[in-house]
Length: 264
Ligand SMILES: C[S@@+](CC[C@H](N)C(=O)[O-])C[C@H]1O[C@@H](n2cnc3c(N)ncnc32)[C@H](O)[C@@H]1O
Image (cartoon, rainbow, N blue to C red; front, side, top):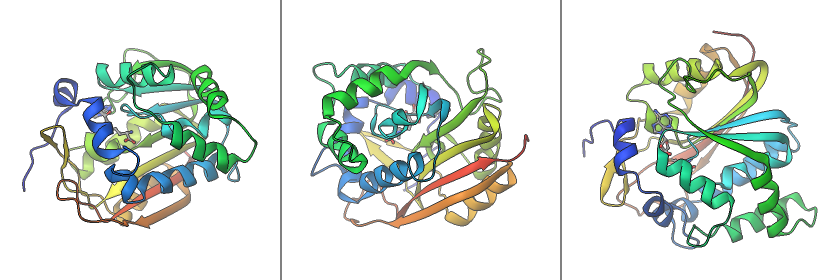
C-alpha cells in the first residue's frame, strides 16, 4: 500500500504517544517486543556504553519519541543527556516518563533488564533516578534543518543517539544523507553517533493512522554514514523473529556505532 510521506507537522498533529507505546512496546504483545527489536537494541546499547567505551559529557537523544529505554545505558556513561524531538506531545510524554508520573507507560521490566545486564545490583528505582537526573533538558528539534536545534546554537556534543527516527523523518535517500550532515554539525570530531533503524520497513500503523517509512538497507546505511564523514566502528543486523503483523513489515533491525572523523 502506498502511504504518502508523513511530514513533521503530521507527527505534531497526529502521533499519539500512548497509542504508539501500546502497539509497539507493551510487554508480551508489543510488536517491537515480540519481534526481538527491543532486546537487540538494549543489548547493543549496553555494549556501546560499556565494553566499547562510548562515554563523555553530553549525549543528545534525537527523535526519542515517547520512549526512554534507549537512554538507560547511556545515563551511566554521560554527565548529561539532552532529549530532542519535533513534537510537543512526545517531548512532554518523555519528560513525564522520566518522572515516572502516574498513567505513563510502565518501563519497569525493561529497566530491570538493563540493571541485570549491568550486573551492579542497581535497583529499578535507583536507575529511574539516575536517568531522571542525567536528562537535563528536552529541546525542540527538526533533523531536516541544517542546525536541527535552531534557533539554539549548542556546544558540540560527544555523542548523538537516534533510534527509530531518521527512516521516518526523511522522504528519500538524498534527504537521509543530508540529515546525517545536519546531525554531524551537532557533534565534535572524534565523537560518536549511534543509529538504530528498521530495515526494509513498510509504513507503520499507530492509532488509526499510517506513518510513512523510507525503505533502508544495510548497504545504503554503510555508504551514507561513511560518505558523510563518519567511520563505522560496529554495525550489527538482527533478523526479525516475528513476522505476522500486517501493519508494520520489516525484515531486520540494525544498530550502528560510528565515529565522526571530519566535518562535512
Ligand atoms: C517512531 S517515533 C519514535 C521512536 C522511538 N525513538 C523509538 O525508539 O521507539 C519517530 C519519532 O521521530 C520524530 N520525528 C519525525 N520527524 C522529525 C523531524 N523532522 N525532526 C525530529 N524528529 C522527528 C517524531 O516526533 C517521533 O518521535
